[in-house]
Structure formats: C-alpha cells, structure tokens
Image (tube, rainbow, N blue to C red; front, side, top):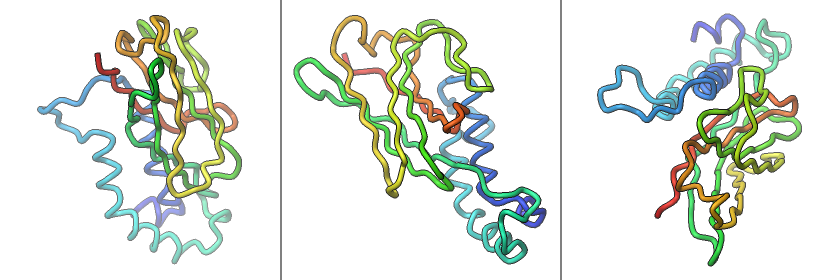
Amino acid sequence: MLMARAGYHPDFVPALHHLLHAQGSAAPASLNAMHPCWEERDRELVRAYVAASLEFEQRWHDWYASPGGNPPIVVFADAPTIRKGGAKEWEVAISMNCKNLAGAIEVVLRRDVGGGGFDSAGFQLKPPELELRELTGCTSPRTVITFHLPESPKHDMSRANRADVYILDDAGSILARTDVPKLPQ
C-alpha cells in the first residue's frame, strides 16, 4: 500500500519477488523455514494486490506519469510438468501468465551440471550441458511452452544436478525462474 501511494504500481512487488527468486539458490523448501516460499508469497500477494491496485489507480490516473512509471513485466510461471511424450522423448511443459508485456519473452530450459545459470545481468556464468530456447508473445491468459527432450544419455534429465527454466525479457534480463523436477526413473 505504501508503494502504491508513493506512485509505484503494485506489479513492482511480484516483479521484485521473481527477480530475487531467480537470483537465489535452488535449495528445496524446508519444513522449518522461517520465511514463506516464493509460491506462497505470490498467493499471499493476491489479497493485498487488489486493494493496492485500487489505491494506485485512484491516485495515479496516468500510470506513465507516476514516480514509478509504467508497471514492469511480470511473469507468473507454474512449476514445469514432465511426461513421457513418446517412446524416446520427454515433454517438459511450462504454463505461465504474463502481465504488462509488449513484445516477446524467451523461455530457456537449461540443464547445468555443477552450477551455471545466469548472473544478475542475465549473462551466462558458464555454458550449460543442455539449453533449449523458445520465444513467445505470452498473449493468452495461460500460455504453455512445451520442450521436447530426446531420451538419450546426453539429455537424461534424471541425472542432472540442476535443471531450470528461465524466462527472459527482450533485453535478456531475467523475469522469472522455476526448477524442473527430475524425470522419473
């Protein structure tokens, strides 16, 4: 509410949450955690978001003229689902919802062995073992991107140390990240 009154669109809060999540570690959530997980933060934000949006719109009729300017691009990505797509392939599907998008985003599936990923500016830290990319306009309320992975030792996601999906804007900056679960054995 304070940010909305100060002229920052409520979409800045989930954009910040997603950026912090993308920059953080991929450690699994603990039952003894003192802070909510990122998905829980998104769910809790829904309650305050409506009131903050009304407050912002009442004070700032022209969003672009507010101190925060236009709201940022926000991508809400669900956890990827994995299923057997054929005799020799896996399908990894990522369902997402985009807000404030003008243009395209890039969805990147990366398998890194022993680290890797992107730095805060969106640059690769080291080459991934596997990287698949897909551009989308994210124009429907639920956009689903599906990657087809051949079943071979090189693309065996069950042996990966880490596999993630990064969602990048047109400048290559990270908008969101989600972990890919390991394939069933």
